[in-house]
Length: 331
Ligand SMILES: Nc1ncnc2c1ncn2[C@@H]1O[C@H](COP(=O)(O)OP(=O)(O)OP(=O)(O)O)[C@@H](O)[C@H]1O
Image (cartoon, rainbow, N blue to C red; front, side):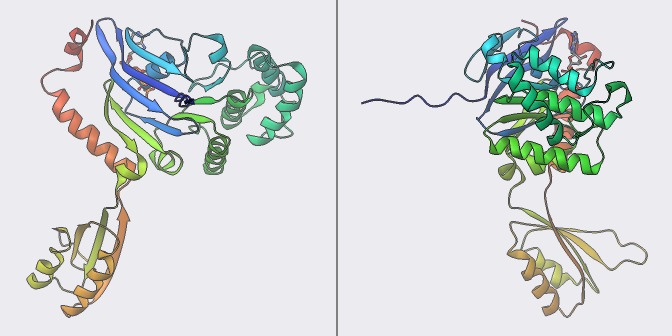
């Protein structure tokens, strides 16, 4: 019986750890990112995201633990050739035109000259710089530079791309375009490892996410599972009788809102799914009240993130102030 080997994940790490000056800035990091998956790596400033990316790219040696990208070592030039990287702070060769800059990176990536000549106008078009490739980079705006950086990252048709804050300098149109590029990469089977503080964007484009804080994964999973089917519903009515409150309480957890000048009495309900929404309307009508607002919305990554970080802060921060933390974790 022949057994075909399972395809290697795009990224695999186990118990990955990095210690700087006696302090573990990444600890016990175990991640798997599948081929063609868009993975969001999220955390507050200083959480260890860039250090992790550098270890995945083979630019920083882990203190301990295992890293495999595309089934091999990130130190292997054959593997590196298949990786793309857009760092947050790219140092551009400003005196070059965008075309020269991409030709330079094509040579670094070992692309044959003819293939590069065909590919460069294609990627310039893709990132919205079609017709601007002949201009020198020192005349580019911040957003144009970020687009040029993205063109560089996808130039050599990588199988895995690391994008560190790829939309930080872009206007809303540019952000939508980058999301479309990421979706197109995914459709071609390219895996994308995305660092971004723009959680609404991450939510739209990522399949899986991991939340990190102080070098540790707090939670990881598919966006769908993490956000769940649960709904938050804001309800405003002409009168909130104890009977109505009691019946609504049977649908889910209820929090009565503070009465405010000029606003109808209101409450927040957390219900298990959409089926509860028309039931709310029915119960209000049955109680003889008028319904002024019924606003259901799903949890979002931002509130999940804030919640996780807040709880992690409570658990982690108290006993060990940051300055004292330098003694912990070094092996
Ligand atoms: N070369 C280094 N030497 C010493 N400490 C370092 C080094 N690089 C990073 N650190 C420390 O490691 C911690 C994590 O830094 P890292 O840049 O990985 O965080 P980050 O999550 O990418 O932050 P940000 O969102 O602000 O970019 C920080 O406390 C940082 O000061």
